[in-house]
Amino acid sequence: MISAIFSKFDLSKNQQVFTPLYQWFFNKLQFDNFTLDVDSTIHTRYGSQEGAKKGYNPKKPGRLSHHPLMAFIADCKMVANYWQRSGDAYTSNNIESFLDDTFEKLGKKKIGLFRADSGFYDKKVFNYLEKKSINYIIAARMYAPIQHNIASHHNWLKMADGLEIADTNYKSPNWQDSKRMIIIRQYVPTRPKATGRTLSLFKDEGIYRKYRYSCFITNLNLPAEQIWTLYRQRADAENRIKELKYDFGSSSFNVNGFYATEAALNFVMIAYNFISLFRQVVLNTKVHEQMKTLRYKIFAIGGYIIQKGNQRILKLSLAMKRREWFTGLWMNTNNLKAPFIFDS
Figure 1 (cartoon, rainbow, N blue to C red):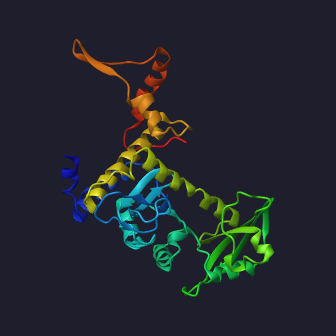
Figure 2: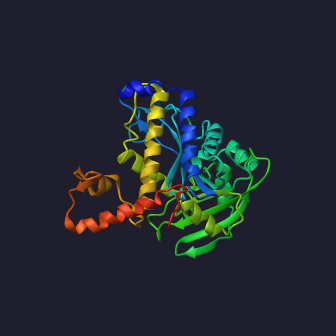
Figure 3: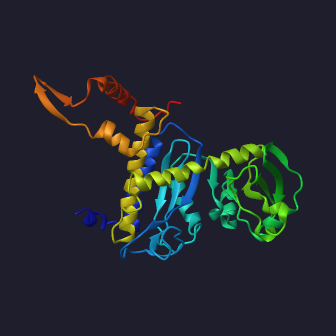
């Protein structure tokens, strides 16, 4: 039955349904100047679903997969867009059209900052964002010219033991103009869990072998350390992806049709947004409750309705010590009136 419903969705139908649905949702949020994080993920497939192809799949090499594009609003922990793609698609493939579609789904909302990992280190991405005057921080790929630039840099500012930062300009052979580049280097003997990469071109030279490096291209005028801090917050997008996979079944929710699967997963994204809204407006706690906890504590509660005069009364099976807390949740539902306002 469900497969038959989703089989009616094609590219056109998905646009007709989900564009106004996302617009309606984000128009209800009394918040603007979003931080937009774009990422991709791998959904391994075990059947013959349309669009499932062999591609980059580190956990299941050789398996068929889909390689969707996803956009997140970091400020309010929401999903802004989801595009299904075949498993052999490169990370930044169709990124310009994806961003056009994302901005349309966000309606009149503005983007204050765009963040992405090195998979989106691409001339077309920089050109797109600069034409729209959008601030960005994008991790650089460690191509040979960048490694040579790092190796020749000698002006480092110490931020902590084993942690240094540099602020310079870099011009790729493929760019018309130079761009600002922030470099982080971490001394591995002092920081053994340091992230980043070694300089493969200089791996035989001792001084470089002891460091791990990270580079970011940005058009922001903020201090270098703030640029790095802002980018590190992008890791929350990966937490959203993990939550969607493990709590909402996004990696296993699929049907045979390519656009049917895209439709099903966009409904998953919308459901995630409503749960995120529920967490922030109704629960309003600092603890990020997992979906299984919400099911146990809130949703999976026995109850029945009785008629008393002209009133219907909902009876819930709740221990006495939990009733005051649950009553508070009911009171908080008064906050679920558009436009939705987030309490800090």
